[in-house]
Picture (cartoon, rainbow, N blue to C red):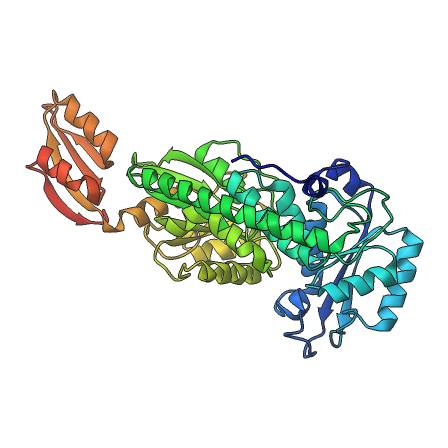
Length: 474
């Protein structure tokens, strides 16, 4: 869908220098301004400052630093600040602002990342006080998404969210990099001078993006209808960012999806067909990772990229059980799933405890006992989590067996006897059903236990009228 940009829009979208080069040359300070326990401030735009009391300060600051590293910023220092309350004008207290200003001058800091949600006024006042660029958690996550999104819809959704966020913040500027701001990122130069014209331009661009998105959504609906005609179950991986979903996806499909020890390494969904042990073909879908305090403007973008998860037959909730905040991360994932209309107690969810290779022996054995895997029981359809390592392959057989059992819960199983010369019928069964068991008699007669999907059952019964029903689930 082509469109003509005005000179102003071209200026907004031009990239005067590669973002990676700008980021690498920008000395960055990461600040975690977290409310002290029992402090007041919730509901004042506090973002993470007022959230997640179950998380340790260290883990929250590490995550913020990891977000900055995800776009290659040169983080020279990170510090946590305990707040008795949130100040409306600068978020931090006056003394803290002055103290940090000295640190910024001494370390030649050009960019300050605040791990909270700042109002435009707070952001502007901090930039004036520190003489450096300031972005908050929302701006940082939007910057990551803007760099990584590659599909048409993902790019449009992120740009729309980015422009909406930027629109209210055009009144500020920073000058430590003397160049015109490029694109809608936050690593640009002194900013725009014609504020009202730029705001109007941004609104016009947002309106055009909304029209483009409507067209993309209609196209996606047609693709969804096409997928519905392909009778393969969908198994979607969801979980907190950097939980190892892409590594697990690669291990299960033998694909080579980008898998890095980095927050938001995967932004665009990837799907592959793969066969389960008994022959069932499934579509495995890798999705973007979740994160706490996800910026509201990106919820729509998440909904678009998580469509496979919303419609999936089985959801694999992948958790990094080696992470100190694994429980809190699981709660965050559950919250996002509920926002997407997915009930977290649904039977289709299998909890996958990943990164078993990073656990010490005692913790690994404790989790094995909790999952039941240490008892070597053959409870394929258990509701217990599955402990795996996408790196070593540990637990993957138990996981695929669990997926098979979950998909087969509402499928009928049959006993079929085939004469040895009926190779066509045998081939049909292998192509269209799961072969649960196969035995041969001395005369060559084959006895099979098969499980068939509901939509294929009429064809099966028409072809194998003598088949004996065994039950459901198999």
